[in-house]
Amino acid sequence: MRTHKISSHGSAHTRHGKPWSGFRIRALLAGAASLTLATAGCTSAVTSAGNTPVRGGTAVWAELASTPPNYIFPYEGSAYFSLSNANYFANLMYRPLYWFGGSGLPTVNNSLSLARPPVFDGAKVTITLKHYRWSNGTPVTARDVMFWLNMELAVPADYGGYSGFPANVKDITVVSPSELTMTMDKAYSPTWFWYNDLSQITPMPAAWDQTASGPSACATTVRDCAAVYNYLNGQAKDLSTYATSPIWGIVDGPWRLSAFNADGHVTFVPNKSYSGPVKPRLAAFEEVPFTTDAAEYNVLQAGVSNGKIDVGYLPEVDAPARPAGSSPLTPGANPLAAKGYTLAPPYFAWGIGFYVLNFQSTTGNGPVIRQLYFRQVLAYLTNQAAVINGPLRGYGAPTVGPVPAMPMTSFLSPKGRKGALYPYNPGKAVTLLASHGWTVVPDGVSTCADPDLCGPRIKKGQGLSLTFPYPSGVSWIALEMDQLQSSASLAGIRLNLRPEPFNELPGGNCVVTKSPCNWDGVAGVGWSYAPDYLPTGEALFMCGVPANAGGYCDKTNEAMINKTLTSGNLSYLYRWQDYLSAQLPVEWTPNPVWLLTEIASNLRGVLPQSPTLDINPENWYFVK
Picture 1 (spheres, rainbow, N blue to C red):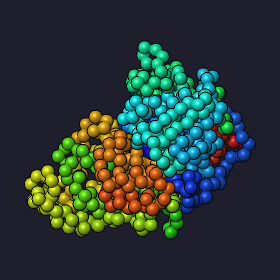
Picture 2 (picture 1 turned 90 degrees about the vertical axis):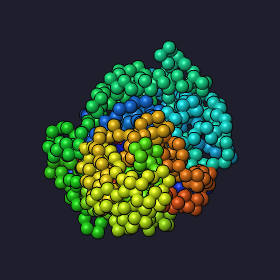
Picture 3 (picture 1 turned 180 degrees about the vertical axis):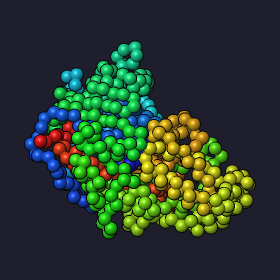
Picture 4 (picture 1 turned 60 degrees about the vertical axis):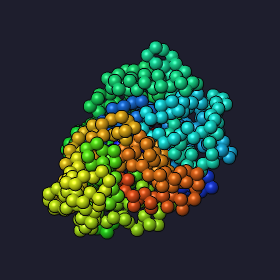
């Protein structure tokens, strides 16, 4: 996963990047991945165009509102760990060792992976690379894999998805340019190790192994890696050089940058040296920014003929109401059919929605947030059903805990299938708050009357007033926040809402990242299980991991997570998720259908869309 700060649109999160963003899943059976998904049809009739493929042309893709890419180095720190930087940007140029997603499912895609499936022999695993080349003509080698691994050993806190790998490996040996072996420090579930550890790796070219002083040796010497990281991180912060840098111009993916603007205008052209099985047919692929989803929709309404957007999305507030009694995966009538667009089948990202509570807040509210009863109060004031049926127009599902409820899989516990533990109930919220020593003032500010009941370090007279920034520019999230603010006021909890551009929201664990902790929560976010595809929680809910933005820390939770890493028995996964669902390390919010995608009727290859949230424009082509 990357928590990704999760981004918004289906809106993250891991990657973990939409204003809410980040998701994944996997089953552990006899060391092999097995996935049980309830799926909808993955095809959609395309109208108005012929079927003769055309080579060339430029396909234009609409970025999510207020989420332009702003970091190119694929070793992203937690502040940059997002879908907009990884899935929609870096992954097009720098391929992960293992690619996930295909046929509409979040499973490993061996065809697009740089390496063959890992071979496990007890605690030893062997990785064999395929014959890929970098755009400078050099092969992708086991040494390039070691470059990434050594950097994780040297500066783990600077990787937003860090969760203990490869520190849990005793020995790594480069056997040959195309093979390396690892010896794990104990027996792990092979599927977990493949889907959540090996999945993190993105090989890096030897030409990147340098500092400002010249070539270095991070690929072979761990102590050299901190200086190399500092140099590359510094280069990645200079957005003006992205399209011209000799560093970032070395790619192994199907695309390379030809133009980049910090406002989000990005142009890719094919990497003519790409070794993968699907070569781009387009002459160029462009990403274009929007400050709001309403602005994006205005461009869509102008029609395909204006040439501004070939693949965009319907904002939830403009979406056709879902047909009564139908699945969230059933769209209503397309409002843009006459404009030359086809509405793709809705799909869920493999992830969860939530808002973060900062257990480490220095505003004075940290002690309040650390009280489970207070988190339960907020849960009773969070009306997921109203958000789904209102702002989301029916295109969403409740989040019931750390394992997604949609797509439905064998990983969701029987208890989780019954729904949320704390369904919307303002009356219960008021009663619970009053029973813990608070004088409840509806539509005002409740105050602590009895510190012995309120909890440790909560002072008499302290008021319940919390500051919540949330991503600006996304209509449904703004409506969700207004609704939460209104509900909270019924219990005398004042939420001071503060819309901000997504890239300016607090990102990651403030103590780990050594950033200001003077905030109480971040709303409108979530998590994508990618690049850790098995929903075991170690990258998001363990103590001290960078993506654990709120700083939740619980030893029982840690022990339960560790059990899910070593055993493929689903009972351990069920026990953990049921425990954490009740503990409320974050406040669960709806998981929207990720996007209601509008596709130009003369563009093919976009479907099916992947729940891993990666895009593959090398598959796209125009027809006439």
